[in-house]
Amino acid sequence: MKKILGILSLAGMLTACGENSTQKTEEGVIVQNDFDSLQGWIPETPSLNREQAHSGTHSIKVGPGVEYGLTFSSLLGTLSGTKMHKVTINGWVYLPKINNSASLVFQITDPKQNDDKIIWEPIKLASVVEKSGQWQKFTKEITLPENVSYDHKMSVYLWANNAGEPAYLDDLKIVAE
Image (cartoon, rainbow, N blue to C red; front, side):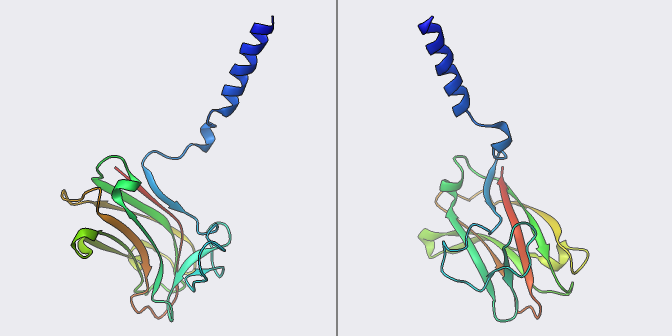
């Protein structure tokens, strides 16, 4: 009887330690950030703001006086155990005015070659939203060059590009294939 209770208790504990299927991350997700948990972990930066947020309380902002937003940067080999051929970037954008020059820049560089650019892909935010003054979801698929390698560095950042009006980004996600 004690043996059976012991086995049942062990089985119950192992089941409790298992992953909850609702908490599993989406396959292929290499970057995901809602920018809310950064407060206090990084030095104060004018691009992390509370003026607009799609979810939570924070987003990334660029515009007059803030040319570049926070940058995500990591070696490809630390993001994925397999060679990446394509990435899908999605997030939420808020533009107070539609004629905005801001872009979300995706780039891969070679740190061994003085950060030479392998790919530099600006996503013009005004081209991915239809209306100003409201949050809109965007998706952009980028095919990576064959010569990308695990020791290359991927960076993603919001760039004002001399925008006369602010641009906001929230809930950024990058999925690799």
